[in-house]
Image 1 (cartoon, rainbow, N blue to C red):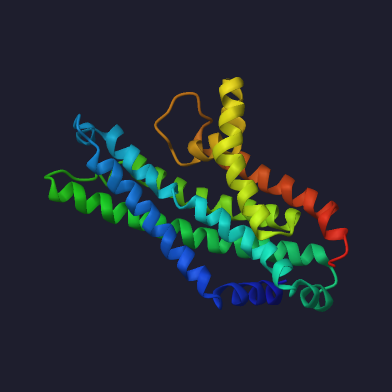
Image 2: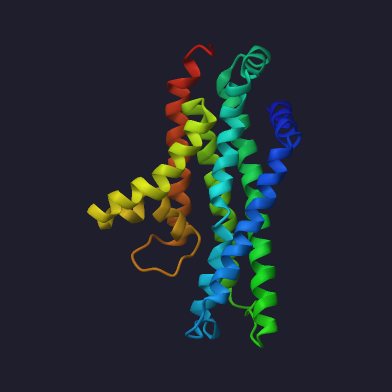
Length: 244
């Protein structure tokens, strides 16, 4: 398993697009933080709640983390290399496990980049404005850690979705459409359901300043459950089908 994980990690890190997406993850988080810092006409940043809203930007790179996850699994089907992978490792469940471990690792790196960028940008901006981040307050680190775990969980979900669809475009578009379109429609009709859906769970994990969410640990459990269920469905269906 360790050898297979190392192989999957080398495949991913040898591709330029991986590093571009990781850099874009940090950039997206930084830009989101700047947008909130600039748009503070009411002086909300003087209070902890305003700073927590800005630190929530640490999870904004999750949109690219889920993209990376889909590419980890579905990319091999697109390029036809999955045949060689299955020939060298006939037990397809082990391949899926290695890809999930790779997704978790890369997702954590994406989350770390997002959280570090958010901390650096918000800290520097507030300092220049005569303000500061209260680094001794637990909400600062809870929000940054939540953003890191958000990216990590989304990458794992992306791997599961990519395995299920076997198509990078379908997997990415499907995942993003669900998160940013379909969930909105569902929540508008059944508001109380929102906290249990992936986006609601992610907001809870990211320590969003919003009422009606699950506790932060509950968000992590829900996202982990979504990744596990989708991966299980893929293992029982897609993995058993012929590659061609």
